[in-house]
Image (tube, rainbow, N blue to C red):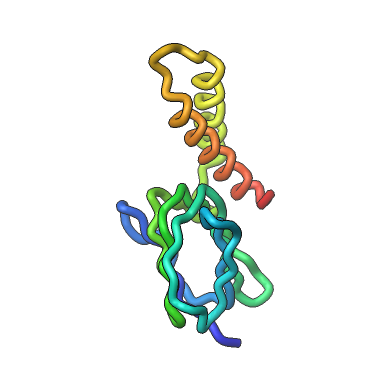
Length: 134
């Protein structure tokens, strides 16, 4: 079966580098499925899971936005933050979720509700990916 090289990169360095049969991501415009030979494109990403299909297994990587660049033989995901499912610290993600929920419930004048909502979305995404609920 044909494969495509996938690189997931953050400002801190590479997170994933392998050949896969299919990549699925949540773009701003909707869900994208990328196969080898896909037409070149660039798209902004939402907070979500990157699904990487290799044979009968699927690996998950949590991304917090960014961009996907697709070429026929290579896919690069430039993410603000990314973690492979096996590297997600569930306790830390749960603590982040609780902290964001507290911030949203306080509703003080100086609270940035958009930022708190994004933090909550990132934490829920990480928890769901770690628990394989994506």
